[in-house]
Image (cartoon, rainbow, N blue to C red; front, side):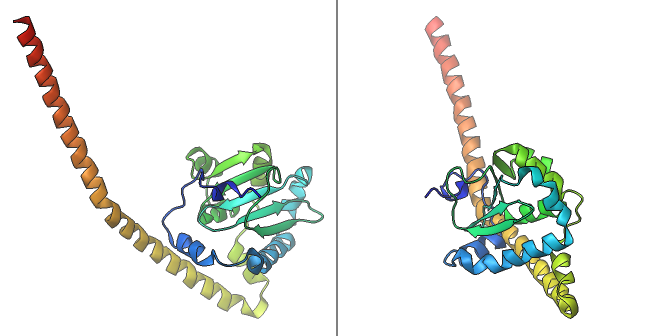
Length: 226
């Protein structure tokens, strides 16, 4: 079995140092099947609240797409057949099993699905990377554009009297993740600062040596002429 591109060590997108990356490490021992009910529920909500998304993918019903969150230890296989759509959590994929693969950090992929970011800008900046049939990915992006997807609100609407506490819990989790992200960025900066400083010092020293070498060469040429 050939694993998804992100699992081969040649990932085209570097996983960011973030709380999600730590979550991915914690989830690594977990079997994908344990997460499947969550994705089944998400697909059920999307089908009920945004049925037009899958209808717009009718021309690509047999074109499966691999969604690869590079900071998590699994991939998500999307089969967009409007009659029988599937969203399957997998550890890996087989060669030729999908028409296209989208690689990117989980938060970016969610923001893209909810229409909160400019997909073109993300792709051009290589923060998200597409492999395979780009036409399928463009069709998927066009299908979700303007759909008004809000995963938390969509799921809350399905919970009836539990909607309010769910929103509160989700908001608290998002706030916590945001604070953790800031702490991670501070930690990352503190860790790499000495390396950046050493690199700058080495660059300055190399520039100094190159200048001295040029002066020696000039002196040698003048000595040769004399």
